[in-house]
Length: 149
Image (cartoon, rainbow, N blue to C red):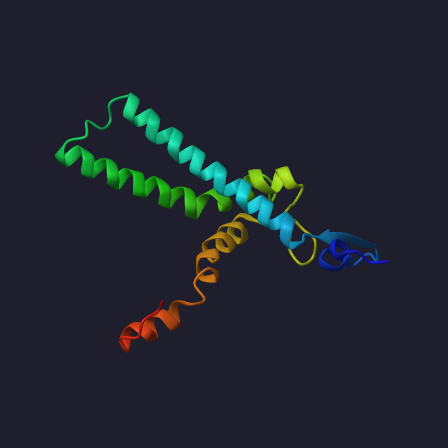
């Protein structure tokens, strides 16, 4: 009898030019969600640790210009973590981030080969576009002064 996990998680078969067949299991929603949550927690923890370290070394004195520069630095650090954490780790760790490694996942191409650096960076940069499916509707509602709530 097929369980719900077997219905969501499926296997993918690859046949090489040498006529060698192998298959690998495609990750399901819950494995991916757990890996994403772990990666998100890691990014937040790194950001908080770096901010606390900067406060302790005296980089911010919480007055005027240095407070503003500190805010700019915090935003730039968050930008770097959000946009390059996944791409760099997947490039240098054979398709894995910390969350994927913890969940036993790996990013591969459709041929079952490891991804290269360009593929890793592009898939993580394009994640931003995937997270914005409602943007055209919000823009349309704004133009016509409709409430989006």
